[in-house]
Amino acid sequence: MSDKQKSVALFDSTLRDGAQAEGISFSVLDKLKIVKLLDDLGVDYVEAGNPGSNPKDLEFFHQVASMKLEHVRLVAFGATRRRNTAVEDDSNIQSLLSAGTPVVSIFGKSWDFQVTDIIRTTLKENLAMIHDTISFLVGQGKEVVFDAEHFFDGYTENPRYAMETVMKAAAAGASSIVLCDTRGGAVPSQVRDATAHVVEELSKSYPHIIVGIHAHNDASCADANSIVAVEAGSRQVQGTLVGFGERCGNACLATIIPTLQLKLGYDVVEDDALAHLTLVSHSVAEIANVSIPHGTPYIGRSAFTHKGGMHIDGISKNPRSFEHINPESVGNERRMLMSEVAGRATILKRIQRYAPELGKEAPQTKQIIDALKHLEMSGYQFEGAESSFELVIAKHLGKYKPYFELDHYKTLGERPLMGDPLASHTAVVKVAVDGQMAIAVAQGDGPVHALDKALRKVLEDFYPLLGIVHLTDYKVRVLDSKDASAAKVRVLIETTDGENSWSTVGVSTDIIEASWMALVDSIEYKLMKEGVVPPASHEQGEK
Image (cartoon, rainbow, N blue to C red; front, side, top):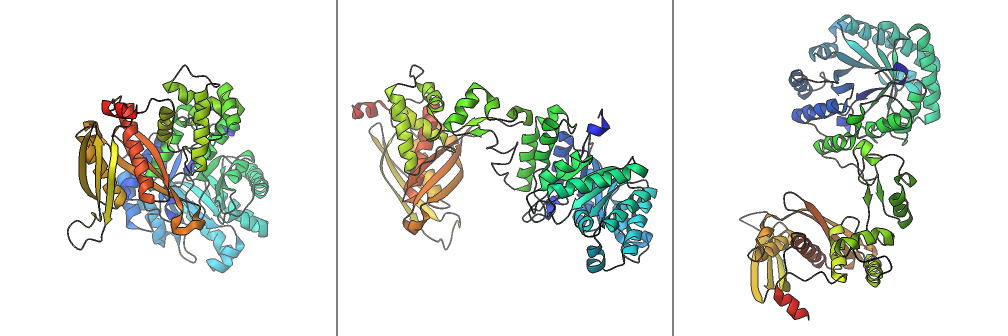
């Protein structure tokens, strides 16, 4: 990058620190996929594991060696030599060498309490452990990153000793020294002042050494601490791409990157890579089998989502009114929600998809807005079920005709003693289509699954395109839980035809009925979008 003073190196620890998060377990293949994604993003360093801790990490280092990486320098992670042990005889140090990575990250204690009470050695021996390990690995041709573990705690209680550990690592040849908020309890002012002091002291004798920051989120300050550290002179930021890690997690690189680059003018990644940040982040989360919270800045589903009428009106006139950056710069998108607070202008845009001639003062517009408010008061929510909302509009504009009429449905549940253990429920659905009665029976894993299968089965003879439609997600939200088992529930389902997905909603005190409502909306929405004409007999019957 052009200006070293305005460049920040990214050090991703998703595969090491992130793997220590509760519920996270990466296979070797998972790790290889994530490395490729991080390389595409332009990450500088990827800390890929501790080869001395488990055979899986050793196998990963063996396989990743054959990958062609454009940006990433792979890092093996380990501790300083054991106390009172020659570095050449330490098996963990030898494992680090066997990983074959160009970079090694070594952590050592910078808090005197950790030295005396946890690893139970002397302050002098701890300094020797740091120096011996780093100098040995540098002698083996490795670039060494020194993680000053518990630095901010140590700097608070014994600043002189904490600085001694840093200077000892510098003297031994570390290329970068990373200040770690290992317990995650530091606050921005503390991090800013300590980082500035370290940067100043190192610049006197070791101006080539990069200072880094490694923050945990136990006080909800990891991202802020990382940013103020950069402002204080840090030029390497460690974290995990989407923030998961030990306890409350690590600094989230996906939110730090755009803040540093778009807000503060630092060179972090290329602009075209930044435009893929949301996609890469969600891809990593998918591999890790975790969900990114909708409210996550920059990359969350709700990051550029607008619901309030005044907000939507402002965005429609000029996005700067309520958006601090262009969503496309980080690969996200703007969303306008349908709700009782969305305002007439937003709802009118939806209405005009069906009736372009209608204005905001038209009686139908008011009727739809009133209907929306009434439905949401009853428990409906259209933020995640906009397909159901489109059906509401079509019905109020007289553009909706039913595709079938329900005669009855029935579900039966039992615990199977033999046969298919997943077929725990049976559903019977009888409908009328164009005056013809039809009935179908289906078994499924639960009553809703069985009902879904039976409904599509009975309709496929009349509407063959439903053969490619299937349910992909099902969520239940209990409303007014004080009513216990008599409470009203909201069911949200997602359906796909293999190319497109849509969501619908149903509300009732009966979970099966609520599910039925959502299923019917799902089927009718698909038929309506495909331009299927309802049977003529329905039109005649409604006159």
